[in-house]
Amino acid sequence: MISSLAARCSPEQVWLYVVENQPGGLAAYASLPHCGAVIGGGEPDRIRRLVTWLAEEVERRRLARLSPGEPSAPVIVLVIDGWEYFEDRGSPDFFETPLLVTLRGIVAGGPPVGVHTVAVGGHDMLRGKTPDLFSRRLFLPFPREETRRSYLTSGMVSPPVLAGRAIEAAGGLHAQICLPPEDLPAPARRPSHARPAQGPKPFPPLPAAVPLGELPDQAIGVGGPDVTPVELDLFDLGPHLVLVSGPSGSGRSNAALVMATVLLRAGVRVLAIGPPRSPLVRSLPEARALAGTSFTDAALREAVEAFEGERYAVVVDDLDQVTVTAREQGFDTLPTLLQDILAPSELGRRALVLCGDATPLLEGHRRALSGEVSEVLRSGTRFLLTPTSRVHAREHGINLEPDQFFGGRWGGRTWGRLGGWIWCSSRCFRGAGRGGAALPCSSPGAASTCGTRGIHWRSIPPWHGAPSPGRSPRNRTRCRSRHRSPGWVSCRHHPTEAPTGADRKPGSACRRHWALK
Picture (cartoon, rainbow, N blue to C red):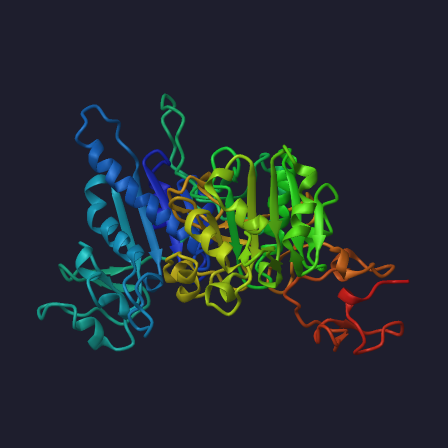
């Protein structure tokens, strides 16, 4: 069907979008000028962007019909190979999500305005409300002929059980589905006097890593419907409070380093606070750094005395390990520096960025900085890195659907909120949409991907030690996920990361705790 449309119609007449639940050879059609995107089942953010745009396009065309003289728009055909991605009633965890309801609205309301849906699926697709939404239904052979017969009228004759032999449910017409061509069809020729064709709207995937040097000054990532740079302004537009929360290995330290770098480039003074192993306190010579896990409020105020009269931000990494002891005057406990920055009146003067795993603080297992985290959740910008469950998201005040959870391999992907919903590092933090995004690495050329699971990492942080002579960068660096690999034995600090060799005793230290003399 896709090949037939591409051969008979020009890109001015038909736009194609394909959702492929399981790889089945449809990815090659992405090169057609008619095709806006071929999206796999492992890209839920792209699917959500596509469905959201199609719903908006159906509504826009419906209103445009009321305006005379409106130019005709191309026909949009959405092909879904694997309806089970949206509606798998055979799964015990299935429930109807708002995304499925939106898709049903596109199926029902799209044909009058030129938006058509072709759905391909198995027996589970025939349950529920879905079959009644389609005007034409073709039934291919099932393992049991009784399954197909149950959806046909009594007067219809079943076709022979052959591959590709189908029957049309409304009229009983037998049809033989042809084989696709070996090569992609050439697009139909356009008239010589026609205007240049406007191609379909693209839906590019989110990148796995983004060099910070390729983004505008105030951008901390890319995302949104068009995967555009996302800017974070803590001093002019606000809010001036930011929380980045995520489990270990999700990219929270990288996010702290990126935000601090962006602030320094904008001329803002930075006080970096974190444990000694944090890259935040080791990789920014322009910032004032305090390394440790326990601090007094007097030490923090002494560190920012040099910033008096200037705009500055306090960036905390691994907040779940940091404790700030407040001062006492008489029987009263005075507010700390971090608590002073929480005041709305500090917008334009000071900012606070908290990065780490906020779950222990939100669940009440840790009291240090819990008040600051709660205030940022209430009135600040929040980012939730690689959420994996609905409970985890709700603890951070974000309601997500099953397709919006990220697996362990999506380091740097986040959902956020600023006044309203945003695309995880997306829509320039205007708070008017939903989606996912990737945070950049702090310097060009320092971004790479773990070969095991694709997690973003920065090459050779200071705590990894010196590289061994003759080893390539790929072999002398490791991602934070601590994957087991050949040639590594136990370590008293990290049981899966100790190197073997004559100069390194097994069980003594790993690369993170060892350096060449």
